[in-house]
Image (tube, rainbow, N blue to C red; front, side):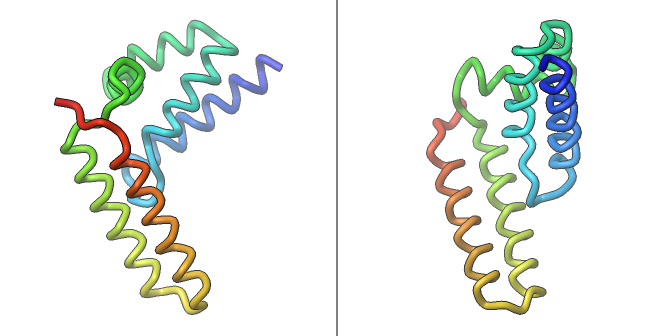
Length: 118
């Protein structure tokens, strides 16, 4: 079972890193999930993730403060809406457009529900 959790942790890290560059794929949730999976499977990889120079701050800040910096909130919501609106323009079915917009509204509300880190 530990190997399965470890592999899922690495998949989440990979998706989190891809999410840094793709606007519709979130980074922090995947890294938080990876940290939880690593915590249950390998302390070594959990420590690696928390101490990683680029990825660690995403996880550590959220775990410690349960807050998101205003710059990250603005950037993530802006990129989310840019990606969603672009997708809405290129998809045909109306139900899919509505679904994309509902997802965007839900994610926006979720992001705004967290405290803003000073």
